[in-house]
Image (cartoon, rainbow, N blue to C red; front, side):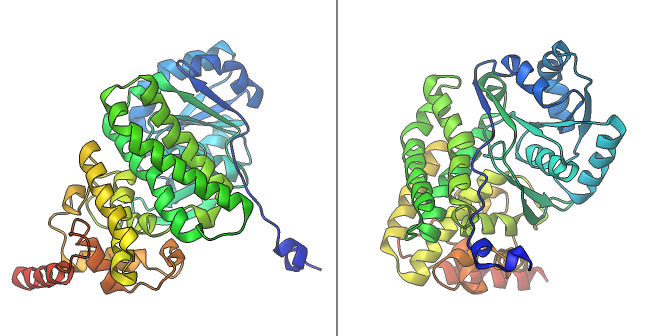
Length: 390
Protein backbone atom coordinates (compact mmCIF):
# COMPACT_ATOMS: atom_id res chain seq x y z
CA UNK A 1 0.00 0.00 0.00
CA UNK A 2 1.17 3.51 -0.76
CA UNK A 3 2.06 5.02 2.65
CA UNK A 4 0.84 8.44 1.57
CA UNK A 5 -2.71 7.12 1.39
CA UNK A 6 -2.81 5.74 4.93
CA UNK A 7 -4.79 7.70 7.55
CA UNK A 8 -1.81 7.93 9.89
CA UNK A 9 0.41 9.49 7.25
CA UNK A 10 -2.31 11.78 5.96
CA UNK A 11 -2.61 13.33 9.42
CA UNK A 12 1.13 13.76 9.91
CA UNK A 13 2.47 17.28 10.32
CA UNK A 14 5.84 18.03 8.74
CA UNK A 15 7.48 21.23 9.93
CA UNK A 16 10.86 22.78 9.25
CA UNK A 17 11.00 25.12 12.19
CA UNK A 18 14.49 26.59 12.29
CA UNK A 19 18.03 26.50 10.91
CA UNK A 20 20.21 23.83 12.47
CA UNK A 21 22.45 26.58 13.84
CA UNK A 22 22.41 30.38 14.03
CA UNK A 23 25.51 32.50 14.59
CA UNK A 24 24.48 36.05 15.41
CA UNK A 25 26.38 39.15 16.42
CA UNK A 26 28.81 41.85 15.38
CA UNK A 27 31.47 40.38 13.10
CA UNK A 28 29.65 37.05 13.28
CA UNK A 29 31.01 36.07 9.87
CA UNK A 30 34.59 36.19 11.09
CA UNK A 31 33.64 33.74 13.87
CA UNK A 32 31.85 31.32 11.54
CA UNK A 33 34.84 29.74 9.80
CA UNK A 34 34.90 26.44 11.69
CA UNK A 35 31.14 26.01 11.42
CA UNK A 36 31.35 26.58 7.67
CA UNK A 37 34.23 24.14 7.29
CA UNK A 38 32.28 21.40 9.06
CA UNK A 39 29.64 21.59 6.33
CA UNK A 40 31.91 21.28 3.29
CA UNK A 41 35.34 21.83 1.79
CA UNK A 42 34.38 23.06 -1.70
CA UNK A 43 31.74 25.78 -1.24
CA UNK A 44 30.03 27.59 -4.09
CA UNK A 45 29.12 31.12 -3.00
CA UNK A 46 25.94 32.35 -4.68
CA UNK A 47 24.81 35.97 -4.79
CA UNK A 48 24.18 38.94 -7.06
CA UNK A 49 27.02 40.55 -9.00
CA UNK A 50 27.13 43.67 -6.86
CA UNK A 51 26.76 41.85 -3.55
CA UNK A 52 29.49 39.35 -4.38
CA UNK A 53 31.87 42.15 -5.32
CA UNK A 54 31.15 44.19 -2.18
CA UNK A 55 31.17 41.31 0.30
CA UNK A 56 33.94 39.16 -1.18
CA UNK A 57 36.68 40.47 1.15
CA UNK A 58 34.53 39.53 4.16
CA UNK A 59 33.70 35.94 3.31
CA UNK A 60 36.71 35.05 1.18
CA UNK A 61 39.21 35.60 3.98
CA UNK A 62 37.10 33.50 6.37
CA UNK A 63 36.83 30.62 3.90
CA UNK A 64 40.48 30.74 2.90
CA UNK A 65 41.57 30.64 6.54
CA UNK A 66 39.83 27.27 6.70
CA UNK A 67 41.67 26.21 3.50
CA UNK A 68 38.43 25.72 1.62
CA UNK A 69 38.36 25.56 -2.18
CA UNK A 70 35.99 28.41 -3.03
CA UNK A 71 34.15 29.35 -6.21
CA UNK A 72 31.47 31.96 -6.71
CA UNK A 73 28.55 32.34 -9.12
CA UNK A 74 25.99 35.07 -9.72
CA UNK A 75 22.30 34.24 -9.82
CA UNK A 76 21.59 37.28 -12.00
CA UNK A 77 18.52 39.31 -11.07
CA UNK A 78 15.95 36.76 -9.93
CA UNK A 79 15.52 33.29 -8.48
CA UNK A 80 14.36 31.95 -11.85
CA UNK A 81 14.38 28.55 -13.49
CA UNK A 82 17.01 29.73 -15.98
CA UNK A 83 19.25 31.02 -13.18
CA UNK A 84 18.91 27.75 -11.26
CA UNK A 85 19.80 25.70 -14.36
CA UNK A 86 22.93 27.78 -14.93
CA UNK A 87 23.94 27.54 -11.28
CA UNK A 88 23.43 23.78 -11.38
CA UNK A 89 26.14 23.66 -14.02
CA UNK A 90 28.40 25.74 -11.78
CA UNK A 91 27.84 23.27 -8.93
CA UNK A 92 28.92 20.40 -11.17
CA UNK A 93 31.90 22.25 -12.64
CA UNK A 94 33.25 23.14 -9.19
CA UNK A 95 32.29 19.78 -7.67
CA UNK A 96 30.76 21.80 -4.89
CA UNK A 97 29.79 20.08 -1.64
CA UNK A 98 28.29 23.17 0.02
CA UNK A 99 26.19 26.14 -1.12
CA UNK A 100 26.61 29.51 0.58
CA UNK A 101 24.02 32.17 -0.20
CA UNK A 102 25.06 35.79 0.32
CA UNK A 103 22.66 38.67 -0.25
CA UNK A 104 19.00 39.60 -0.01
CA UNK A 105 15.90 37.48 -0.21
CA UNK A 106 16.16 36.45 -3.86
CA UNK A 107 19.82 35.47 -3.52
CA UNK A 108 19.08 33.39 -0.44
CA UNK A 109 16.02 31.79 -2.02
CA UNK A 110 18.17 30.85 -5.01
CA UNK A 111 20.90 29.36 -2.82
CA UNK A 112 18.40 27.35 -0.75
CA UNK A 113 16.62 25.94 -3.79
CA UNK A 114 19.90 25.21 -5.57
CA UNK A 115 21.14 23.31 -2.51
CA UNK A 116 17.85 21.40 -2.33
CA UNK A 117 18.07 20.45 -6.00
CA UNK A 118 21.74 19.47 -5.64
CA UNK A 119 21.18 17.64 -2.31
CA UNK A 120 23.83 19.75 -0.59
CA UNK A 121 23.93 21.63 2.71
CA UNK A 122 23.29 25.36 2.57
CA UNK A 123 24.44 28.39 4.56
CA UNK A 124 22.59 31.71 4.42
CA UNK A 125 24.38 35.00 5.03
CA UNK A 126 21.90 37.88 4.71
CA UNK A 127 23.29 41.26 3.73
CA UNK A 128 20.10 43.14 4.61
CA UNK A 129 17.16 42.74 6.97
CA UNK A 130 14.61 43.03 4.17
CA UNK A 131 13.07 39.54 4.60
CA UNK A 132 13.21 36.38 6.71
CA UNK A 133 14.47 34.33 3.74
CA UNK A 134 17.69 33.51 5.59
CA UNK A 135 15.65 31.44 8.06
CA UNK A 136 12.91 29.70 6.11
CA UNK A 137 12.50 26.36 4.33
CA UNK A 138 10.89 28.08 1.36
CA UNK A 139 12.01 29.55 -1.95
CA UNK A 140 10.03 31.80 -4.27
CA UNK A 141 10.60 31.35 -8.00
CA UNK A 142 10.20 34.25 -10.43
CA UNK A 143 10.30 34.69 -14.18
CA UNK A 144 13.36 36.26 -15.76
CA UNK A 145 11.33 39.49 -15.83
CA UNK A 146 10.72 39.39 -12.06
CA UNK A 147 7.13 38.10 -12.04
CA UNK A 148 6.28 35.72 -9.20
CA UNK A 149 5.55 32.20 -10.50
CA UNK A 150 5.41 29.77 -7.57
CA UNK A 151 7.04 28.82 -4.29
CA UNK A 152 8.84 25.63 -3.33
CA UNK A 153 8.65 24.13 0.15
CA UNK A 154 12.05 22.72 1.08
CA UNK A 155 12.82 19.71 3.23
CA UNK A 156 14.61 21.71 5.90
CA UNK A 157 15.71 25.15 6.95
CA UNK A 158 19.31 26.17 6.25
CA UNK A 159 22.07 24.21 7.95
CA UNK A 160 23.62 27.46 9.18
CA UNK A 161 22.47 31.08 9.30
CA UNK A 162 25.11 33.74 9.89
CA UNK A 163 23.59 37.08 10.93
CA UNK A 164 26.39 39.64 10.99
CA UNK A 165 25.12 42.99 12.22
CA UNK A 166 28.01 44.90 10.65
CA UNK A 167 27.23 43.34 7.27
CA UNK A 168 23.52 44.16 7.65
CA UNK A 169 24.37 47.75 8.55
CA UNK A 170 26.01 48.28 5.14
CA UNK A 171 22.63 47.85 3.41
CA UNK A 172 20.53 50.90 2.45
CA UNK A 173 18.08 51.87 5.17
CA UNK A 174 15.06 51.30 2.93
CA UNK A 175 15.81 47.56 3.01
CA UNK A 176 15.22 47.47 6.77
CA UNK A 177 12.06 49.53 6.33
CA UNK A 178 10.89 46.97 3.77
CA UNK A 179 11.79 44.17 6.17
CA UNK A 180 9.60 45.78 8.82
CA UNK A 181 6.72 45.79 6.33
CA UNK A 182 7.27 42.15 5.42
CA UNK A 183 7.56 41.07 9.06
CA UNK A 184 4.59 42.97 10.43
CA UNK A 185 2.41 41.24 7.84
CA UNK A 186 2.82 38.04 9.86
CA UNK A 187 0.28 39.26 12.42
CA UNK A 188 -2.32 40.53 9.98
CA UNK A 189 -2.13 37.41 7.83
CA UNK A 190 -1.71 34.75 10.55
CA UNK A 191 -4.44 36.19 12.75
CA UNK A 192 -7.03 36.13 9.98
CA UNK A 193 -6.09 32.70 8.59
CA UNK A 194 -5.23 30.90 11.83
CA UNK A 195 -6.46 33.00 14.75
CA UNK A 196 -9.14 30.44 15.63
CA UNK A 197 -6.93 27.36 15.30
CA UNK A 198 -6.91 24.79 18.11
CA UNK A 199 -3.49 23.43 17.11
CA UNK A 200 -0.87 24.16 19.74
CA UNK A 201 1.96 25.22 17.47
CA UNK A 202 -0.26 27.38 15.31
CA UNK A 203 -1.59 29.10 18.43
CA UNK A 204 2.04 29.73 19.42
CA UNK A 205 2.86 31.08 15.96
CA UNK A 206 -0.08 33.50 15.98
CA UNK A 207 0.85 34.76 19.43
CA UNK A 208 4.45 35.25 18.36
CA UNK A 209 3.17 37.21 15.38
CA UNK A 210 1.40 39.53 17.81
CA UNK A 211 4.61 39.94 19.81
CA UNK A 212 6.48 40.68 16.57
CA UNK A 213 3.94 43.35 15.62
CA UNK A 214 4.24 45.01 19.02
CA UNK A 215 8.05 45.03 18.89
CA UNK A 216 7.96 46.69 15.47
CA UNK A 217 5.34 49.26 16.50
CA UNK A 218 7.32 50.20 19.59
CA UNK A 219 10.89 50.14 18.31
CA UNK A 220 11.06 50.67 14.53
CA UNK A 221 11.18 54.46 14.54
CA UNK A 222 13.97 54.55 17.13
CA UNK A 223 15.89 51.80 15.32
CA UNK A 224 15.85 53.70 12.04
CA UNK A 225 17.25 56.78 13.78
CA UNK A 226 20.09 54.81 15.42
CA UNK A 227 21.61 52.27 12.98
CA UNK A 228 23.84 49.81 14.77
CA UNK A 229 22.34 50.51 18.20
CA UNK A 230 20.85 47.95 20.57
CA UNK A 231 17.30 48.83 19.48
CA UNK A 232 18.34 48.58 15.83
CA UNK A 233 19.67 45.06 16.47
CA UNK A 234 16.37 44.14 18.14
CA UNK A 235 14.45 45.19 15.04
CA UNK A 236 16.88 43.35 12.75
CA UNK A 237 16.40 40.21 14.87
CA UNK A 238 12.64 40.69 14.59
CA UNK A 239 12.60 40.95 10.80
CA UNK A 240 15.12 38.22 10.02
CA UNK A 241 14.76 35.74 12.88
CA UNK A 242 11.45 36.10 14.72
CA UNK A 243 9.50 36.43 11.47
CA UNK A 244 11.11 33.16 10.38
CA UNK A 245 10.17 31.45 13.64
CA UNK A 246 6.51 32.25 13.02
CA UNK A 247 6.53 30.70 9.56
CA UNK A 248 8.40 27.67 10.89
CA UNK A 249 6.01 27.02 13.77
CA UNK A 250 2.81 27.84 11.94
CA UNK A 251 3.61 26.26 8.59
CA UNK A 252 2.14 27.28 5.26
CA UNK A 253 -1.36 28.03 6.51
CA UNK A 254 0.01 30.57 8.99
CA UNK A 255 2.49 32.18 6.63
CA UNK A 256 0.72 34.28 3.98
CA UNK A 257 -2.76 35.44 3.03
CA UNK A 258 -3.88 38.48 1.02
CA UNK A 259 -0.92 40.80 1.62
CA UNK A 260 1.52 38.43 -0.07
CA UNK A 261 -1.02 37.55 -2.76
CA UNK A 262 -1.27 41.23 -3.68
CA UNK A 263 2.53 41.38 -3.80
CA UNK A 264 2.56 38.44 -6.21
CA UNK A 265 0.07 40.13 -8.50
CA UNK A 266 1.99 43.40 -8.55
CA UNK A 267 5.22 41.66 -9.64
CA UNK A 268 3.56 40.94 -13.00
CA UNK A 269 3.35 44.63 -13.83
CA UNK A 270 6.20 46.15 -15.87
CA UNK A 271 7.39 48.54 -13.12
CA UNK A 272 9.78 47.14 -10.50
CA UNK A 273 10.81 50.21 -8.51
CA UNK A 274 9.76 48.76 -5.15
CA UNK A 275 11.04 45.71 -3.31
CA UNK A 276 9.29 42.73 -1.74
CA UNK A 277 8.53 44.07 1.73
CA UNK A 278 7.26 47.38 0.39
CA UNK A 279 4.70 45.60 -1.81
CA UNK A 280 3.73 43.33 1.09
CA UNK A 281 3.25 46.33 3.39
CA UNK A 282 0.90 47.89 0.86
CA UNK A 283 -0.80 44.50 0.57
CA UNK A 284 -1.61 44.54 4.30
CA UNK A 285 -3.59 47.73 3.79
CA UNK A 286 -5.41 46.11 0.87
CA UNK A 287 -6.26 43.07 3.01
CA UNK A 288 -7.60 45.21 5.85
CA UNK A 289 -9.59 47.28 3.35
CA UNK A 290 -11.14 44.05 2.02
CA UNK A 291 -12.09 42.95 5.54
CA UNK A 292 -13.64 46.37 6.08
CA UNK A 293 -15.51 46.50 2.76
CA UNK A 294 -16.66 42.90 2.43
CA UNK A 295 -17.25 42.01 6.08
CA UNK A 296 -17.92 45.43 7.57
CA UNK A 297 -15.11 44.66 10.02
CA UNK A 298 -14.61 47.72 12.23
CA UNK A 299 -11.48 46.28 13.86
CA UNK A 300 -9.91 46.02 10.41
CA UNK A 301 -10.86 49.64 9.73
CA UNK A 302 -9.18 50.74 12.97
CA UNK A 303 -6.12 48.60 12.27
CA UNK A 304 -5.74 50.15 8.82
CA UNK A 305 -5.82 53.66 10.25
CA UNK A 306 -3.24 52.66 12.86
CA UNK A 307 -0.99 51.23 10.16
CA UNK A 308 -1.30 54.32 7.99
CA UNK A 309 0.11 56.43 10.85
CA UNK A 310 2.89 53.90 11.44
CA UNK A 311 3.75 53.78 7.74
CA UNK A 312 3.91 57.58 7.57
CA UNK A 313 6.28 57.60 10.54
CA UNK A 314 8.80 55.14 9.11
CA UNK A 315 8.33 55.58 5.36
CA UNK A 316 6.39 52.53 4.17
CA UNK A 317 4.20 52.86 1.05
CA UNK A 318 0.51 53.53 1.52
CA UNK A 319 -0.71 53.65 -2.07
CA UNK A 320 0.00 52.35 -5.55
CA UNK A 321 1.61 55.71 -6.28
CA UNK A 322 4.05 55.20 -3.42
CA UNK A 323 5.09 51.95 -5.14
CA UNK A 324 5.87 53.81 -8.38
CA UNK A 325 2.54 52.83 -9.92
CA UNK A 326 0.79 56.20 -10.01
CA UNK A 327 0.12 55.80 -13.75
CA UNK A 328 -1.26 52.27 -13.53
CA UNK A 329 -4.08 51.64 -16.01
CA UNK A 330 -7.36 49.94 -15.26
CA UNK A 331 -6.24 46.97 -17.36
CA UNK A 332 -3.01 46.64 -15.36
CA UNK A 333 -4.89 46.92 -12.09
CA UNK A 334 -7.24 44.17 -13.21
CA UNK A 335 -4.30 42.00 -14.31
CA UNK A 336 -2.64 42.29 -10.91
CA UNK A 337 -5.92 41.57 -9.13
CA UNK A 338 -6.69 38.51 -11.25
CA UNK A 339 -3.23 37.06 -10.59
CA UNK A 340 -3.64 37.70 -6.86
CA UNK A 341 -6.94 35.80 -7.06
CA UNK A 342 -5.60 32.78 -8.97
CA UNK A 343 -7.07 29.44 -7.90
CA UNK A 344 -3.99 28.47 -5.87
CA UNK A 345 -3.50 31.90 -4.30
CA UNK A 346 -3.05 32.35 -0.57
CA UNK A 347 -5.72 35.06 -0.67
CA UNK A 348 -8.29 32.27 -0.44
CA UNK A 349 -7.25 31.75 3.20
CA UNK A 350 -9.39 34.78 3.95
CA UNK A 351 -12.62 33.71 5.72
CA UNK A 352 -14.73 35.19 2.92
CA UNK A 353 -14.84 35.11 -0.87
CA UNK A 354 -13.28 37.97 -2.82
CA UNK A 355 -14.07 38.82 -6.44
CA UNK A 356 -11.90 40.80 -8.83
CA UNK A 357 -13.88 44.04 -8.58
CA UNK A 358 -13.70 44.02 -4.79
CA UNK A 359 -9.95 43.52 -4.80
CA UNK A 360 -9.47 46.28 -7.38
CA UNK A 361 -11.59 48.61 -5.26
CA UNK A 362 -9.52 47.82 -2.18
CA UNK A 363 -6.26 48.37 -4.08
CA UNK A 364 -7.21 51.94 -5.03
CA UNK A 365 -8.62 52.93 -1.63
CA UNK A 366 -5.95 51.94 0.89
CA UNK A 367 -5.87 55.46 2.38
CA UNK A 368 -9.63 56.05 2.38
CA UNK A 369 -11.21 57.19 5.65
CA UNK A 370 -12.60 54.37 7.75
CA UNK A 371 -15.56 52.94 5.82
CA UNK A 372 -14.79 55.34 2.96
CA UNK A 373 -17.00 54.78 -0.10
CA UNK A 374 -14.92 56.53 -2.75
CA UNK A 375 -13.18 53.43 -4.12
CA UNK A 376 -15.67 52.65 -6.88
CA UNK A 377 -15.51 56.25 -8.06
CA UNK A 378 -11.73 55.89 -8.26
CA UNK A 379 -12.07 52.86 -10.50
CA UNK A 380 -14.63 54.67 -12.67
CA UNK A 381 -12.18 57.56 -13.04
CA UNK A 382 -9.47 55.12 -14.13
CA UNK A 383 -11.82 53.58 -16.69
CA UNK A 384 -12.59 57.00 -18.16
CA UNK A 385 -8.87 57.83 -18.28
CA UNK A 386 -8.19 54.56 -20.12
CA UNK A 387 -10.87 55.37 -22.69
CA UNK A 388 -9.42 58.84 -23.24
CA UNK A 389 -5.93 57.39 -23.66
CA UNK A 390 -7.20 55.04 -26.35
